[in-house]
Image (cartoon, rainbow, N blue to C red; front, side):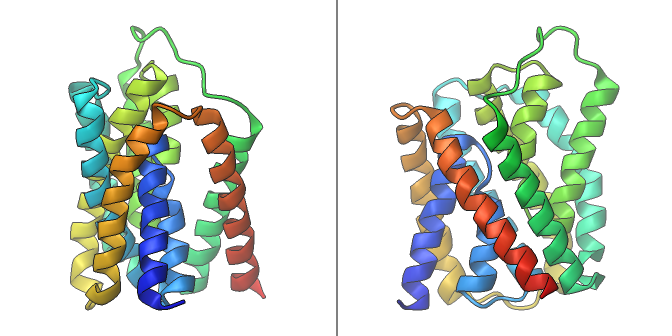
Length: 249
């Protein structure tokens, strides 16, 4: 199977994940870019941010048309993460590659385990939001995005539900706004040290991801999200175990 075909398949899966679940795509994008397309971890993280930012905007437009995006609180939540996304993204290339791979695999494993353990997080009443807690959650998400090159949707959705009291459909749609803002901020910080991206592979990956995001929104309306989430979680857990084993042994 050629690298181009692998890029198209991986991109479609990433886009479908973002469109259906509002997150998780970047957790698969990074290992796909490393192990399928042969990129170095730091370069894969940069390419992942570009892919996830563009795909999130595409998915965001689809969810906005359905009325599932809360623009003002979502923008405020995302803005809290921008400073850390920029600061951490600017220095992440100086960290050891093995450390980044281990950290990524542990985060991916934790996300998969959370998805497998139970259903959707319970929403609050939507009227008792604590600004300090919301700002802290947003900042933490920005730091994760800058360090590992992931959009953090698998963290954003639970945070929007439990901290801001969003209903699940609104959390999924608004998470794409948060992902796009944080990914663009971290990407701007990483670009000066990223080197030249292989657009022969990144371009098709990105195109397939964008198409997948539109298709994912359609699928989300027809297939139970919990079933799709479990399938994704099993795949993500397998990827996390493989990456951890590869980094340590």
